[in-house]
Amino acid sequence: PESPVPALRSSSMLSSSTLSSFDYDVPKVDDASDMSSSSTASSRFTMFRQNKAVKWILGAVVKLVIMSVLLRMQRQRKVDDSTNDNATSGSSAENKQLDKLYAMPLPTTPQELSEVNSELAGLDPEFILKWAHHHLHDSPELGDSHPLVQATSFGPTGLVILDHLALHNLLDTIPVVTMDTLHLFQESYTFYETVQSHYKSPLHLTITKPLDMIEEPLMSKAEFEDAYSANLWKDDPKLYTKVTKLEPMQQKLEEWDAVMWITGRRRSQGGERGKLDVLEFEPYPQGSDMSSAANSSPFHSSKGRWKLNPLAYWSYDQVWSYIRNNDVPYNPLYDQGYTSIGD
Image (tube, rainbow, N blue to C red; front, side):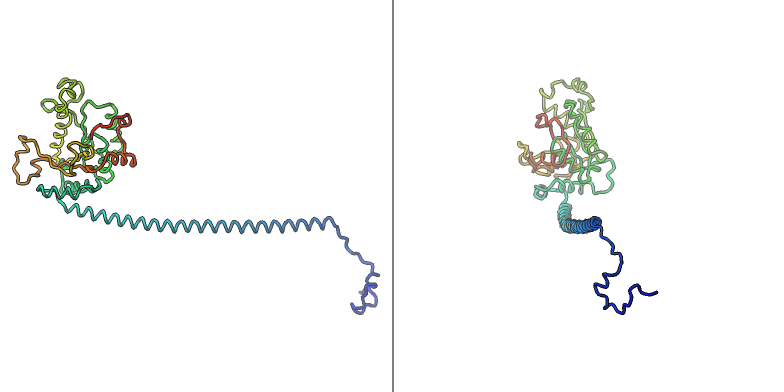
């Protein structure tokens, strides 16, 4: 079709006057719509920039968290490696200490006893108890015998020893014997149950009773008063101790063929215990059937029993610090002001 612009030969011929003569529609601009579109675009651009900033900040935070976690893991790994090295080193040192102790047998002469006590003095109870257990239990089948026994009235020192026996898995083979005098406070009888509940199955607890004149057990306080008197503890303390504690315990030790018994005595308790050794030999009373056996060794089992005092060098404060720091149960009578219930 013909061009609507006559005689146009080239674009250069289109002057402004020529163009202005054409009748054509120029679209009108809506000022309000244009401003709205501009505002929307500006808003979107601002949101885009804000989102980009938020993403950058979040990315930086995530990176910082990851770096922090990695650094913490690295530090913990170093601590664990150091702990393992120390544990290995400590375990190695403990094994060497135990090997050295295990090579040291029960003494057969006073000189050997002195040397053994020099080695045991000041050692942690763990090593002393393991040494005794090694020599008395690491042997062929023992049958019904119990060569190593703990005797305690569940005083603080006895409880520390009991906790060590449990901690080092020795309660399975070391029975515990305590003496019921029939004159204890109710709290002490309740505490028997507390101890048994705390240590559960590993604990083999035997409770002795006072003996009458023919060495038969008395089962109630009324029976005791009929056999002796209500005030024997006051009128004749030595006889009272003999029939309520010493003889019942000795009877049980003989029944078990005990070679050594563990006590809670300490040097810090004073008196005749002030120079107490970790290991002692207690001869049988002269005239007893067992004391008459002939043997060249002064420490032969036919002549007496060993007494082991693992906490001989501990102070009163050390004992109670251990009890409180390790949540060891103790008789509530101590919290009522009683200072000595017995070991």
